[in-house]
Length: 374
Image 1 (tube, rainbow, N blue to C red):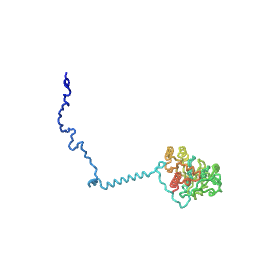
Image 2: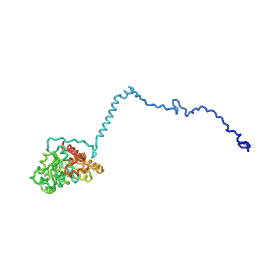
Image 3: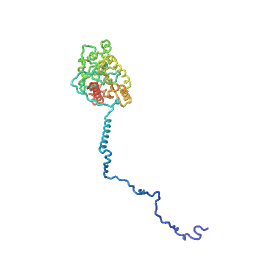
Image 4: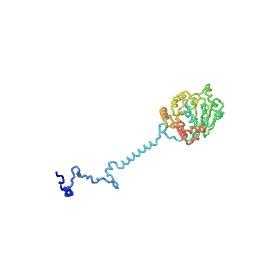
């Protein structure tokens, strides 16, 4: 059967290349209806006519548009709204929230005095020990003395911590507040001693005072004994601060009877918070029966540590219970208080630039504004 090549013929007689088939000439492509650009459109291959920014200033609005929007009036109104918004923002930035959770006011320095006398007597009172009564008495007195007040500190605690904190040796005292209470021939001037702080004096005490509480039981008008013996000092000093013992016994009642006001130092701790209700009951009884002019000047948060949730919760509960009676000033923990006690001087002189010294100076301003009519 013959194949592609016939038998007997060699491949040399075959054509070198297969014959070419002529192809028709290409016709001009005509775009279909789907891709033909419509009128007003540009082919996809052409650049889109984007508007290019120019350096020319925009044309001003027609006067009719300005009249419609009020012209300068609208611009002035917009500027005024922006200014008011900025003022509100500035006011919000200026408000500082203090440790008590309330806006912290600015307390001015007490006004200088031209004369001394008619002292306000304030007791540092809390039946719980270790809450900062003695520390507050020393440093608040020293801060008030810095502001030109003549201050007398009364150590009315048999432990004598106030006297020791100001550098006195309790065993070297010849006369103390005990002698002033129990011996009528002893005068106030014989017992008062100066301190390292100019303008601040001390009525010292030691363990002998513990006997006075027993002996005063048999005295007539025993609750008014301290009021009687410090009467001459009221006309010589501007402020008299009494450091009470940590109890609600007869000595504390004497201090409350002799006082115009009470400051309650309170450690920012749960157990200290519980005892304040009992103290308030005692103050109410003294006001009702012995001293109708007695006032609670304020509650002072001490040993505050804002890093702990417990301290912040106690402070919140304190503000809820006492309201505006709580001082805005809060005394925070610092080792400088212990160091100044060992040195026998107030923190305002031992570590004058410390946070503790600044806190008691601020407390002095607040007390002067709230209690001393400065």
